[in-house]
Length: 86
Image (cartoon, rainbow, N blue to C red; front, side, top):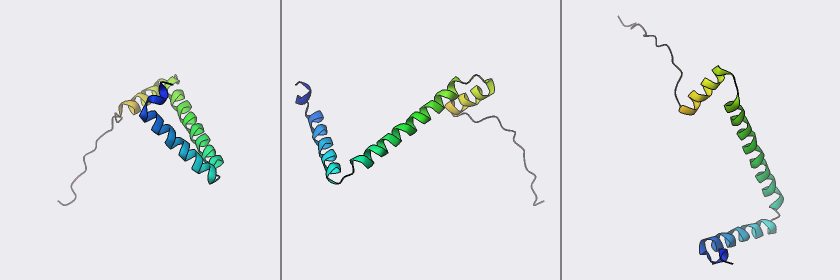
């Protein structure tokens, strides 16, 4: 019972219960559960993709991923343009 003595937890529990009750009255529990499941599926897909990018053994791809992580831009060749006004 020590957890219920925390007023922040108790307030959060009441708010969550109220939200679930309102969703039940409006028959929105199934759509809300579908949205939550879809969000979880997308998060898992993104996590799998990022893990696959990190574990891949191709050195060029690994270097590209490290550049993406460190926000470094790949080296580019700079070409100075001629002034056409002269």
